[in-house]
Image (cartoon, rainbow, N blue to C red; front, side):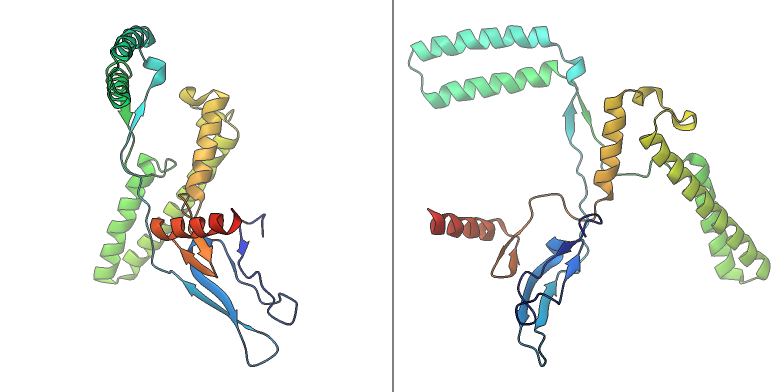
Length: 246
């Protein structure tokens, strides 16, 4: 189960002292409640509540600093001036809040002025889909509409042929892309901008991250077999746990 990313959720005996009835999933955050109740035989009933509503986690656009292009000399000079300014303010017995506000405001202004930023894309695309494949996909869709409208044998055969060609091209492009990530020396996919080991490793782990089916954010907490996702509920569970220990 560990090799395939699966989780076994039943942790109590279901027949005498043995745990024979299992609940295995690759989406543990979707199991809202899991418990056992008395059954009509010598096996207990595994009762579970699942959240089957589809949730799409869209990556919002965000700015990323480009530290390689930063003007560090200018930032250093401004930080030296900031140090002298805060020292004078401390001598004049300014409050801690005033010192902190001066520090954070000046630092953020310096970062915004001397470090360029770029905006990330709003969604994850399929980088192995080329312009040729997109052209074939559009052609396949046009043939599908024509086939549905006319229902002629010739149009049906053209659509099937184009459909199989698109599937074959997608599979070949996908596995060629995977080979290019795992083996960057592949000449067909060698990208001069991704020749370094760091760039290759980043592409590999980005691909693995996008293949995950579960949300990578802070997961919920279970209390008495019930999964809680709201921040206030999770805080209460942690508070009760710490209170019982300390």
